Length: 139
Image 1 (cartoon, helix red, strand yellow):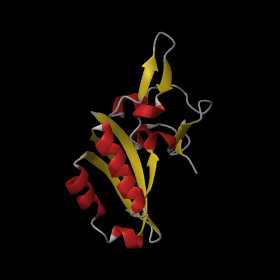
Image 2 (cartoon, one colour; image 1 turned 135 degrees about the horizontal axis):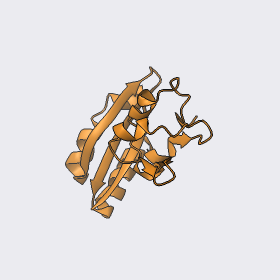
Image 3 (cartoon, one colour; image 1 turned 120 degrees about the vertical axis):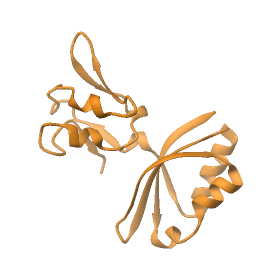
Image 4 (spheres, one colour; image 1 turned 90 degrees about the vertical axis):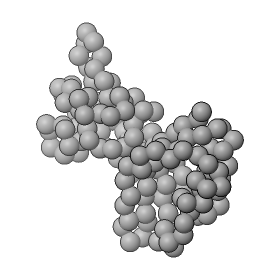
């Protein structure tokens, strides 16, 4: 089984089409926990975990792209500025994927970008001002 967390970006016109329905019906990938769906009027964004055989995964991603959806690996969406982090560990307690952990005995917060699902729970858990912790969305 092959699995990746993806960020899908699409126009309003594409949002009106049953693309995700056809994706699951025709290519049979597993879609797990769509985390967020946002529409700014110009662009929609959906974060989901897509899984299945490598062949079905590749065909499914190709289908999404052919239908006008930009597909990106979610791990490229978040960056960490280690100099801003105080290593208090509050973010590690709420991270559902284990992307944030404490390295012992140094007591240093470690960020594994490949495991990040962009849920942003770490940002709200951070005792510093929002978006002033070590994590932020890439521009």
